[in-house]
Image (cartoon, helix red, strand yellow):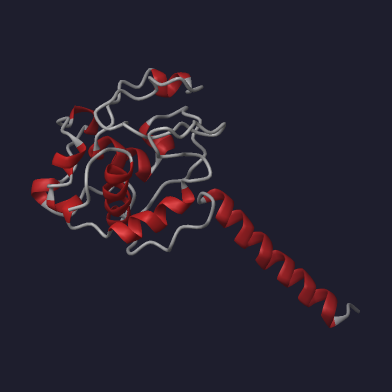
Length: 181
């Protein structure tokens, strides 16, 4: 017969293991919970601002012009900042910040081709023919492994379209000279 403490100990261990694994699979685990359960591949909510069928063909604007689009102008910037907590282990944002061993610095990425900086990008991303716009970033953040199969980014994605919009809006400000609306 097993003692009750042993059984309880195994249950606590199993619960802790589930928590650790879910944090590992979902990024670093510091992000707030999603606001909704929108499927990662669902289009943006309002028709005028909906993602195009192929986000790689989206119009390239300045970061400031993107911030005039209602989806980003009305974003929750403080939530975007909190959501970035799951990204900061791998990415830096400032103009003079160095790359990290696990990910490139993101300053000045808007309107630029992917994988063109001095960093060790995967062949898949280097050959993906992506220009970073909010549309391509939205598709990337939804599920990087689906948007560019074979890339090395170890991140499950951001499920909520609203969370992705908040994070992208915050990144537009933090990685450019654009100002928050």
